[in-house]
Image (cartoon, rainbow, N blue to C red; front, side, top):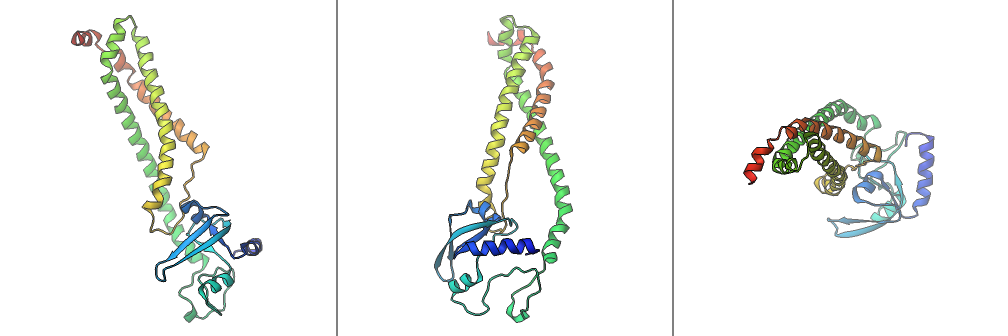
Length: 253
């Protein structure tokens, strides 16, 4: 606890536990738990199973952590005196080193994260740039492939009296709409698939999976994707107009 307001919040939280536990937001997101659910824990060493009623959720997304009253923990483990699992404190505690497995200050815990932050930020920018470039290249070649495969149909439409301008609007308009709808669905499904598979992919990592995808972010990504698609379609307008309709009509005959 870092200040008086945090200590007050913890005191209120401790009163409402009533034999239950408070889970961190990391646990809530990782295992899709909420207040009122039951947290089941199995100890492979003793073969014992424990069920805890979730009374509260704390805003702590760094580690998979469950908080409970020290008296409840000692009673559960049949321990007396100084038995404890982990203690958080904003003041120095009077414990000798032989009673502690390890001890760390807030600065010790934050220092590695602060050291990695510049690297992760730069890597994140490079990853985003490469992702946008890859998506743009894929879209350009995908639309080119679709236009090439549709040349016989374009030639047939030309035989019915459609001019180049009408053909371009007809083909590119439908391509744009189809790909935009597919992209909107794929973005949403990609988020859902990530949420479903990441817990199993990081099963041995004791961290939270705070995967949030809010509507403003979705609309921003969708707008960017639409812009790339529009540019890709415009690049192929000339290809549609230059289709040799007589060649394809002869081959069709």
